[in-house]
Image (cartoon, rainbow, N blue to C red):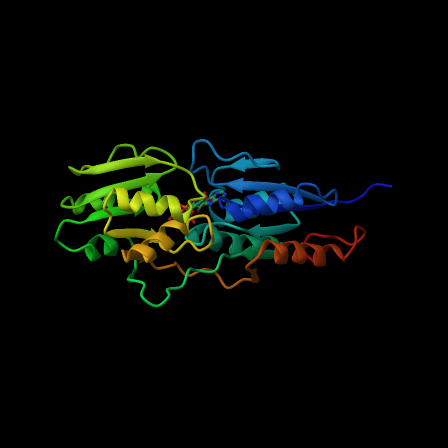
Length: 261
Ligand code: NAP
């Protein structure tokens, strides 16, 4: 007897996507492919087949879903990967492929936090003010060029891959590192570099929370980029719930057509 497998595409680039793929990789009733944007030159090893690079917009993704006979789509991208999430919603609709978003809840401030929320990196640059400050830039290497317009500050930049070319500012220090980052280490980092403000996305989750917790403990200001709005699609917050969604889909059984249910 042949067992029909459900073909699942996970849009990844996050710890959760990798963990979900890991959970599902041992399932013989599922064929998982994980898609990465290709933002890092040396991605963490993944336990399922990978495809890397853009699809060419929503229609490109719809074509891919069709060509690869994908039955289910899980958008487990970063909360700031709004273009990819929008394309996923459109492509799922075009192809009649059920879509689930795995969305990480945002971090929330607690009493005493010195957080300022801003619309984007340009607003973050302005929020630093004119007086020189020691700034920890915990942003993707592709989004920090705008800080060249505020060369009076000293920057500490942490990224997975080198910032090329380096920022055209007189004082910038670069740190190559890949999370997870723990509070104790980030506490030491902020202290050593005498940081007085952290600029970050509100990524949510544990892996990048170290700097937020450390800033809280040290009474350091945090400038957070506001989360982009995402398409209104079925969403869950945990890997368990994403697995349960797939399991519910499988209840249809191997004899019923999986695509377009
Ligand atoms: P984006 O603006 O949503 O995506 C731009 C394009 O990249 C998409 O239209 C798509 O190209 C391609 N893409 C994105 N995710 C993909 C995936 N999983 N598989 C295949 N193609 C993918 O996202 P972004 O430019 O990557 O980043 C936006 C923000 O998210 C940044 O702040 C970044 O730091 C943050 N972030 C992203 C990732 C990531 O892995 N993407 C990880 C951590 C943080 P096509 O239109 O050609 O399909």
